[in-house]
Amino acid sequence: MLAVVFLWLGHVVAISFIEAPLKFRAPGVTVPIGLGIGRLVFRALNIVESVLALVLVVLFAVGPVRPAVVNSVGIAVLALVVQLVFVRPRLSRRTNRVVAGEDLPRSRGHLLYVLFEIVKAAALIVGGVLLISGA
Picture 1 (cartoon, rainbow, N blue to C red):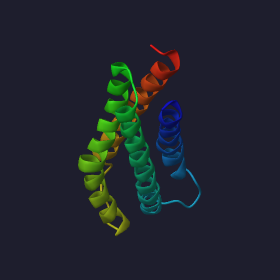
Picture 2 (cartoon, helix red, strand yellow; picture 1 turned 120 degrees about the horizontal axis):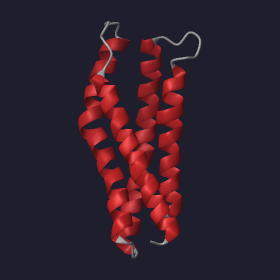
Picture 3 (cartoon, rainbow, N blue to C red; picture 1 turned 90 degrees about the horizontal axis):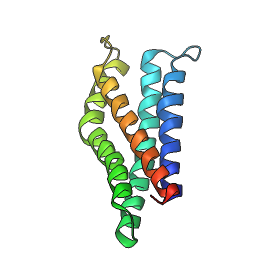
Picture 4 (cartoon, one colour; picture 1 turned 30 degrees about the vertical axis):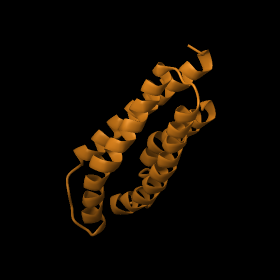
């Protein structure tokens, strides 16, 4: 469980908080190109996250787990579900428009996605610390 929690956290930190903002600083990367890359990278990230979340749910179902761990990791799973069901579809539609050449203002949807990434990362940190401490 501990390994899965921190593996998931590592993916979120590496992609959402390091790769995503840095790609737009690379020479020659325009907003449409960066969004196109981001769409591919985040699709892959969300698949990996979904698999890791499913593994954790299975592990929770078969083994004894303290309620505090289930609650904290459950928050991360819920944040992922909200991102996949509500936030990403809107972002994808907007990204399609920008990649097609439409000039749009900055997106608040991206800020909402980042907010859920912060919630997810914090919940995974708490869950991991609880697993380590045995509390």
